[in-house]
Image 1 (cartoon, chains in turn blue, green):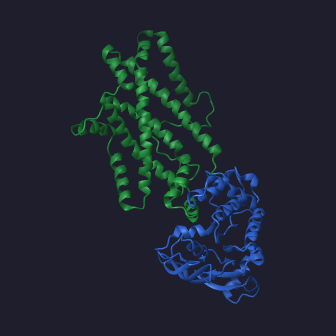
Image 2 (cartoon, helix red, strand yellow):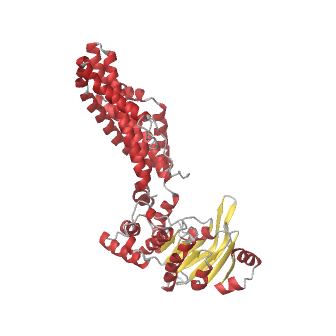
Image 3 (tube, one colour):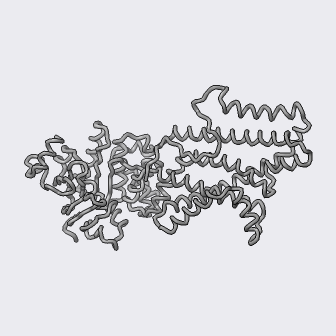
Length: 244
Length: 263
């Protein structure tokens, strides 16, 4: 059994001459919640998207438990089933109801029977507080509701890890809390989470570790208290002054 | 991959002028042309039953044939177009190349020439029935245009939809069939409706293969009675009424889609 749930080792990613990610190393243990912060273009989303291979590393390796994501021989689809992802722009399937959004992958990928999938879907909608919206289409839901459905959709696959790519950045301020509450519950239940976000409140309440990135590099890693209250690096200090 | 503005219509229009839904006046261009044509079609046989009533009784078989050619061709063209569109977006080089060559070749040859080619030139190898040749030619031609519509429609679905599907563990083809294609139908419905109208008009070309469509029936009548003016007036009016009617349906569909737009 692997020591870490997610292991990122010497990871680099180039787009042409642009180095989006430079030699990143990060280990995330089971049940750990890691918040990745940094200015835009610092490579945080790139690093996250490499974990389930929506982007492919130029060099280096990433493991999810014992499965090597970067090994061309490993079945990336199997790994993706274990790694839930939540996007900034929700990306709900706009032609399907909230419930069908959740059940589609269950029936097509896991070949769950449709009755069973529906049962799971309804339970998950209840869990994110949207039981009354199962028949609504994404266009009929608020941003916060859509993002909660998106979290439920990812949870349906019963993942071991959840990736959040700026889950609240596209939301109006009054809707951020309802999404963060769902994420907090998840963290309390012991889900391993890698979150790209600047939500300080969430970080202080739930994060075990904060990672600060700039220009493709991991500059500083520590507990929320260490990084927010007494950052060691100059760049971290400057950045924190800007966002606080 | 460029994202398409959701409000934008995919303009591959050779169909008919789509009536502007904002135009409410009873004297709108559409109302004048449609009801004008309809009234003339009704009044002519009443005022002068000989020859107009006779022409109107002679022609309906042709209208049925025209619809038969149009509907069958559009159905086959949709199937061909779906695969041509997917082929144009395929990551497999050879499939991509074949689909692109198909589209280029078809667009470079006039439909009338394609009709001649399939019936007369290929007739040297296999002589197909006229009707079959006509439908194959129309399908072959319109499949290429449909392919471009499907391609644009698929590209119009935001990239995030594919990513979300892949992130859940779906294969690319599961994502395409379960997530992407169902969402393209909404985008492509209006341009497909437009192609239907264009195809209906182009179906008059099949009369050259002696398929007795609307135009051919008119020609048959005119050549025995020598009443060219009267016959072709009726033929033209019937085409006009049908295409204007269909264009109104396309406009209506478009409006409905905008209201129900769930994107």
